[in-house]
Amino acid sequence: MRILIILAIFAGLMVAVNLVSFVVNRLLSPKDLAGIAPRGKMISVNGRRMHLRWMGEGEKTIVLLPGLGVPLPSVDFEPLMRALSEKYTTVCVEYFGYGHSDGADRPRTNENYAEEIRAALSLAGFKSPYILMPYSASGIYGEYYATKYPAEVEALILLDTTSSAHEEKSVPRFVLTLARFQNAIGMNRFLNSLILPKAMGVREENGYSKQDIREILKFSNHASNQTTEDQLLRFPANVSEVMAMDFPEGLPVLQISAGKRGDKWGKYRAEHRNRLGEHAQCTLIEGSNHGNIYHDHKHRTAVLEAVDRFLGSHG
Image 1 (cartoon, rainbow, N blue to C red):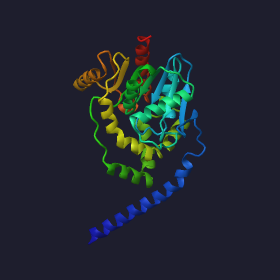
Image 2: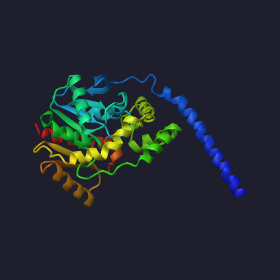
Image 3: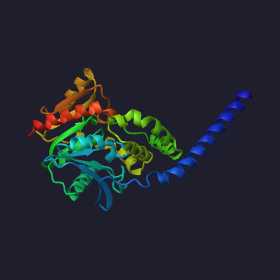
Image 4: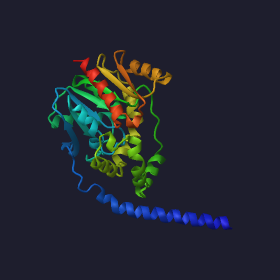
């Protein structure tokens, strides 16, 4: 009997805590993004606003494409953009559903991503060919773009991207349901404040200002939405579509990977070169991991050196 009473008290406390968290989250959410202005320019694409930010005036144009679920790419890429812009014109594209961009009214297919990127860059005044530099899941969209429009791509730099040599497993819908619940009760708000800066390396010693960190944390509370959910659900099909396409022969490719050297690295390198061509180059940033490959100052320096070597060798 005593155990049942204890369990009932515990359950009651959990309900109360979740209820309070839910109310607090509902009160804070509408105010999270108030007063945070876009650092770039809003471009009208298919009747929706897409946020682009750029730096530098270099002859070559590098286009940064964000990873899945990155809450505020235009600030998340800030230190990397500053460094790249010393030599190159550097553009960050915030997809629909990300950062300051509107949500999408079109399915998150490879075709729509490619067309939206093309339209936004053109409307912003940039001219191809571009050097596409996708991170993580965006590697799939970058490969699709390069395959569909090879004349518009000078080179492809894959920043620890999802492999196009393997099928992706579908995400169970209960995962999205759980994510919505966590977001609604404010759990993500609490977890992000504890985990995000440490896990991703978004800290002052890595080149981020206090304002950068505050904005990223606030946008992280809104990273889960209908547009990003659709992206996640369609991602396995997008990978399969790219796998079935023939990658352009001779297109310069650099794969920058995080991790450590070993059998797994050798196997991945072989699969990568088989998929993208024997000319594809691979660079390993040893000691880094997926989350800090460009956030951490030391690893970011290694990335920049690899980019300079690669682009220098291709005119």
